[in-house]
Image (cartoon, rainbow, N blue to C red; front, side, top):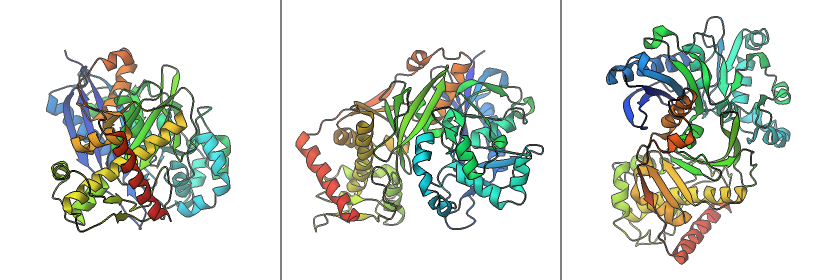
Length: 491
């Protein structure tokens, strides 16, 4: 009987279940979108019960599509949208409020009042003080839902990020855990001691009895109740989506770096067994805990990645689809001196200028549609390069390869230009579902489906490689042009 690993990919807009075989190949996929709730401008919520029902539904659908039964699934691994905050009644299993999503900015003003704590929070958690993370979202629920704080103090309520919620529901309330990678995104977890931080919880008035038990990213947490999936299945791997992608990209060695090209871009670098604290606006986080060893990572985010291509399509109507940008960009030899700095929501790392506004500069009569489309793709490349450079400075090592995934990584022009501008080799795997694959690997390692990292590295070797071929002077000139363009909007 063939055996498989199933990954739950609990994303921001949809739930997916993907079944993998031992060769890291996809056997079956099922996906279902769920509701996005916007109570006020800047507020984003999800219905936790809809997340739960959608995830179980796609798991059953994926198994049915493949003709696979529960006894053929060796393990379930979970990867999830990070920082999203859920509080529920531990007796009824019902949420006391909607999930507050990582994108939600409702606690911005409160975070501003904590500015004197930003150094302490960075030293303990590796994070910058920001409403992005879970801590102030949890405080908001306790402060604003009737009797929530009193009930939490009495031990009646539980907190968790999405993987914690799914594990608790799958096990019918028997297991309340969070993996190290997700815990490290809450702004409540001390990444040096691997414990919830007493000082931060006290400052934010968070009852520690409601916090889940921190666990490694690859161990048996429990088993699913048999009625959900047609039989009990071990749940034994979990990681936040970007850390799961780092693992799925097989970035097992210090200095390994991956970039996910999505709406934004997320770069993570493996920094080894000790946290590296950034001097360049990056955050320090836990990559994963495996076999008693911790791997840390540096992370940098580009706010506008694929979103700039959506802008070309939806607002400027220059393109009909993202897929055609490669062909359009290759119709011209260069951008004819045009640069786009897409600071539509400010500039992220390494600049951190939240009030910055986007610009197009270098326009002449010779600049046309094709040049602007090419400049938009180049803008993604330059922003990624800025973070690669910041990571090289923080880590004290040169990046020799950059592993890529996400939708835009299918664009060969983008990948080749990234290799040229960053003077590195860009590697694109055959399977770009690296987030789900990382969760599957972590689960499979816990049950011996894969023996170790070496076994995983040998499970799939198909990839496309893009090597730097640009003249050093051209690279220098183009980066100077980008730097000048950024300087214009920072004045």
